[in-house]
Length: 294
Image 1: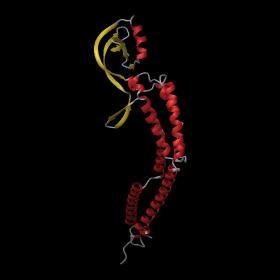
Image 2 (image 1 turned 180 degrees about the vertical axis):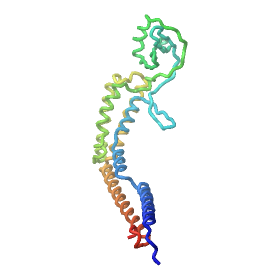
Image 3 (image 1 turned 90 degrees about the vertical axis):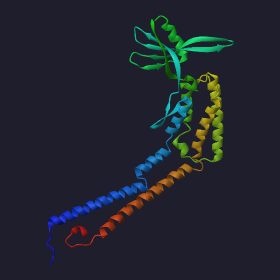
Image 4 (image 1 turned 60 degrees about the vertical axis):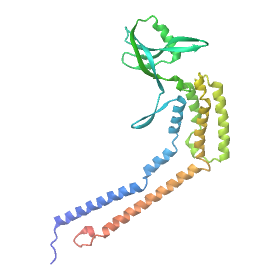
């Protein structure tokens, strides 16, 4: 005896089968994502490989003398600082606070003591680090202002001695370096001999440039001058590493190979998805009363 056709039961079966297919599709999508890159991800990877901003940023932090610090979120660059004991003097009229450091300097056989204004804190709490070359001028103007003695305090101030170059020197070096570290460098075709020629010419030019202008660029102490060689070598080695990515067009070949592999993975994943969908439908028995099995 034939089973009586029930429309409600028929629709319920269709909805159940559709839900099963939807779950299967979700599983396939997850597997495809785990197996290979999507076109958008591949594009981001290629852009990352050719990106020079991170390299230039790292060189700039090095030239500025910035310190690498660590936190729970990872490493980051920060301005070099040092802790000093300073006298606190407050302008009664304006509420501005001045931090003044006592400095001792040896001159021949004698020792000279002098004051250096290291920080100004405005009434709203904003802090201003004062460079030593500006300290004398500001202190001379404070002689005619009534200052209240607020005692002593250890404070963190910028350590200028750890900055090998001033802003002018950093800007000049970065302007030159940015012309060498480009996407075109990575995508060019160089021989090892040509790279050696480029690095030799560049090394001579950098050395002459810094030698003629090191004082103007901020190397005004023996400690800063001791960094002369390491600055030149660090810049040259970083640029050389970027050029060597282009020996024989290696970076071009790498990117082309990655694009071909990604396309193959994408085509294979789509084919597998279609076959899986067909096989899942083929496992259901044909029923003349169920259109979904036709």
